[in-house]
Amino acid sequence: MMNGAYPVQFEVDYPDRPLNRLTTFFRLIVAIPILIVLGLVSGGEWGSYRNGAGASGAAAGGFVFLATLLLILFRQKYPRWWFDWNLELLRFTNRVTIYVALMDDRYPSTDEHQSVHLDVEYPDARRLVRWLPIVKWLLAIPHYIVLFFLDIAALVSVIIAWFAILFTGRYPLALFEFLVGVHRWHNRVIGYALILTTDEYPPFRLRP
Image 1 (cartoon, rainbow, N blue to C red):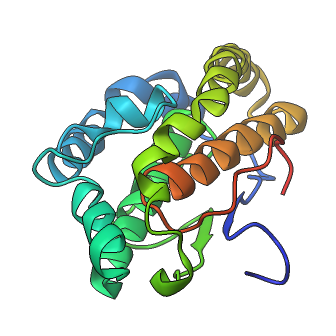
Image 2: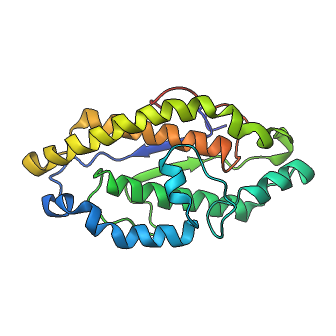
């Protein structure tokens, strides 16, 4: 575990500078190309991730979920390249969601980390409980419920931030920190229930 912290760590650099008002106003339009790219590489996982309930990973592309589940169950292995793919896809997804949420006005990169910092501890599959991945989606249901309401609040926060940026050029710090917390919560649940990197149950909190 990373210095005693939860094995999924997430942070976003606050843009302490004037943000681009023009691209903020048209954000949903200018984000279309990168959303298409994300949809192509994620095999349709995008909508499931944003709904907060995870995704099956059974589609072409997307997170390596079912194969990882079976390999942990029967062989207690988690191939490193499967982990690296899941991690980089999750990082890319976060860069796009941060951009759509107006938290960075730099266009999302497909490989550079930019302002988004997501670290996931590579698991020792021999220490993972073999049968637990079968029921993690069920155990995470309380998180899905909480995240549903948090996502509604997050949407309202983004709308407020949109107006704030247009008038002041700045992202309200309190709203920014709240949205970082919501994304952090999502990533912890995904690390636990979808990419299966930890058996430690995600904490019910927004802060690190």
